[in-house]
Length: 203
DNA sequence: TGAACGATTTCCT
DNA sequence: GGAAATCGTTCAA
Image (tube, rainbow, N blue to C red; front, side, top):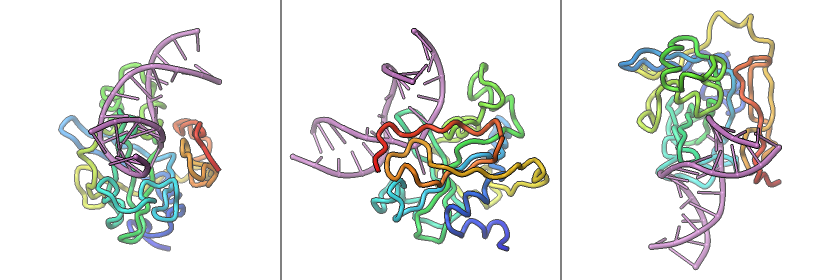
């Protein structure tokens, strides 16, 4: 049984499941926000048509081709930032999208960033919401998550009893191979986002 | 150099 | 359930 953080080097779907329950933490001058991951998606590099890295190495996807344990941040729909944990061996270009989580620390700060009318369960519900709650954007692209820095990924602990099981299904919003079941979530958790199929899905 | 396209969110009906 | 907001990335010419 591989230990943390060696678990990041395995096959992407396995790594994605492993990351459920882990904590993503950001210490900023404003304070700390810590989020427990409840929903993730695997993206498999060169063999996955839905992955940004599928068409090969570009300036944007450079980080994905590097060593595991770094953060890959991309800009979405002209207004949102989403974050992935780079996984797999160096050069493999696989990553796990952090889709949703529960805010464990810094609820007030997260709400200040997200808006006063956002409910607790929705603070980090959705990939762009999660990044906004953490206060992360393009400036965090490429940062190491395992070096004890301001942005860190930590193994989950002490809450295994709260897990009912892991659900799996198709990824949200992808148009290529829309049925590949590489989305994983903690069953029954209210912070998991709702599924939406891409209107342009082709198969 | 130009244009289509999103790994989305929010607000309206 | 549906549409608008908004711009970097990518591919075609």
